[in-house]
Image: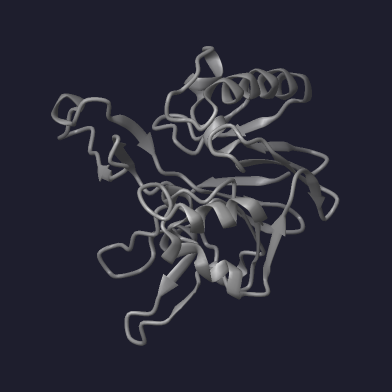
Length: 248
């Protein structure tokens, strides 16, 4: 049986400026935030299988009060050495998903991959798109290193990794977004990134204005629901503030 560990970095609000502002439900209210703000969790996942320690997306890349990369600390708190991560599967490279890809040494100022022992899987066209659209949603400085390392596999279209992980280029939330299905034989674990980010998105039919192709994302969710119900998928929800994962 696979083990799923959510690695939440906390709740944030985000508006048209694409700035992620921490949100504490005990002291903050949505009325205090700018109009059009969305409340989201930032929640990468670790999936442990018989073969791998798989990280699904990499968070904002923030450090804690001790200067430790948050995602590293969460792994350590769950008894996992960050150097033991074997695969990093990236749905896309928006900054709230890719900030933890790399880290700058505070002493030397040199940038390195946050998980140097892992193989990173990134869509090739998403990589090019991120560099060409550096700005609000993409931060080229965080991800450029992927082009400079040999432990990065650039995917194209749909395919399979090690005979038990499939990836599908979906292109709804951003042009080269991809989704992953981990099939261990005992479990089917689906990560739809920002095309299936919260359980509420799976329960109602709507097109999100902030998606590159909102209609396509809506139709994808309908497909995911049907396939997931038929095959017993466990859905991982990167932006859900209440339910990290579950079956429909």
